[in-house]
Length: 83
Image 1 (cartoon, rainbow, N blue to C red):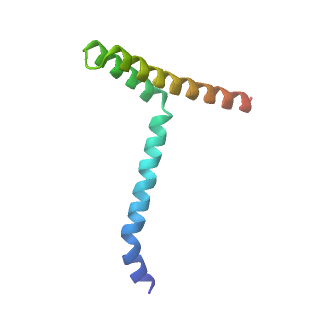
Image 2 (cartoon, helix red, strand yellow):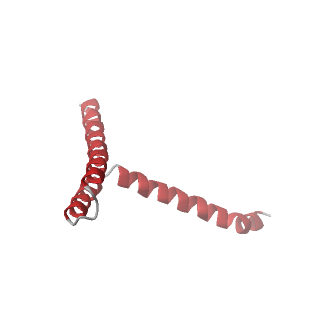
Image 3 (cartoon, one colour):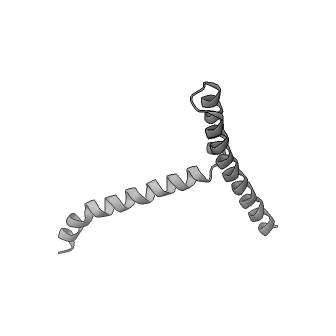
């Protein structure tokens, strides 16, 4: 019966594995300083190319800078705890 169970549940296990990997990649991207800086550069380029207006630029820039600040303060807190 175990072999049948493995065959039946293999697609479900595969989807669960895939979901975990997607979650890990998304979390890494959200907490990666380089990714945030890259998004800021893309945003500035879009603004300079008149793809977005100043209001949209300011809003999105503020969100990205807030994320960057939170990331840096979290890293600083971890360093202080280790010392």
